Amino acid sequence: MIDTTTVLDPAVDLEVEPRTVPALARASWPLPEPTLAYFPDVRFASDRDLGATVTGRDVATASAGRSDAGRSDTVADDFGHVPVLLDRCVDLLTPALTRRAADGSGAVLVDATLGAGGHSERFLTDLPGLRVIGLDRDPSALRIARDRLAGFGSRFTAVRTRYDGIAAALDECGYAAAQSIDGVLFDLGVSSMQLDRTERGFSYAADAPLDMRMDPDLPLTAADILNTFDARDITQILRDFGDERFAARIATHIVRRREQQPFSSTGELVELLYQAIPAPARRTGGHPAKRTFQALRVAVNAELESLRAALPAALTALAPGGRAVVMAYQSLEDKIVKSVFAEATASRSPAGLPVELPGYEPEFTAVTRGAERADAAEIERNPRSAAVRLRAVQRVTGKGRA
Image (cartoon, rainbow, N blue to C red; front, side, top):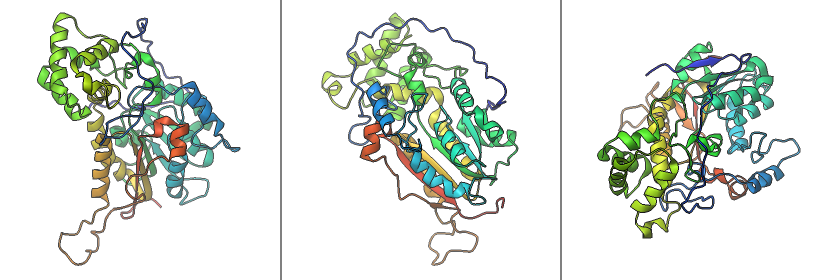
């Protein structure tokens, strides 16, 4: 894997090359209200990954839920972001982070999906001895988080990398890749900031360049896939990453359309999808573009490949007593998380033995029973939490730091 790990000096501004974005026109196709439909019947439901935006009413409602201590997980911060299941993440990770000292002294938390830094800010505030290492591939998000968390000084370090670069990031920060940290948090999927910045091309709710890159330095864009991949590869992407039952039909329309004019905007793709998907199917299950947009985003950013590599690396990095918390927003992600956690919590003794062999006990134990979900009250205040599936495990064996 190409090394994309870069440690950001808290004292130095992150330089990001400005990108020229063409003026955006109003879309000519019918736009939906923000929807909570994701995959009807069998898939999760959330506007987080679909491109619907949080409205001013949502933010106002969230802000109304602020507690006296300013600690509610439904409070919109100054960045227009409401961290998902914030209080629950704190409840799950704090026991691991305070094993040595009540203020978190000596403990290390890796926020593997830093984003705007909402989760990290809460942990740094609650535990004044804690050190947090934040990972993100998006330089814009890193700049926002670094500015937001600058007041915590050397207790916070930002690292530009995909989350499967956790081992290299730990090495850069002076920690071993194995059993050196106390907690790790993953908040998967596209971030609120990326969805809400129209020019990034993640949303089908407004016309924008067909980009969808979480890391602007990646060579592949959504437009590249649509304009250069053959129909068979496009079909596979839509089926595997979007569960799109009309994948072959859509791919045929894409290839036929690009022969006349290459794709360059999200609006062009949405209009094609209205043409390619039969009318009865368009009238059910939410916006007809949702599966295609998800599939392209996952392919552009190699999200599932990265997750498959990141989770084992994160578990390896945990010291005994350390915990991992993962929040997934669609079933493709959650299936991977569930599988990795099931293997980690399984006995390593040969099958069929009546007793557990010494030294072959499970390395991890489940902290949550299956996947936890946001309750109705949080979903009402923070619609982007509707799809979340949270799972957590704790390392119980192995020699780690004291």
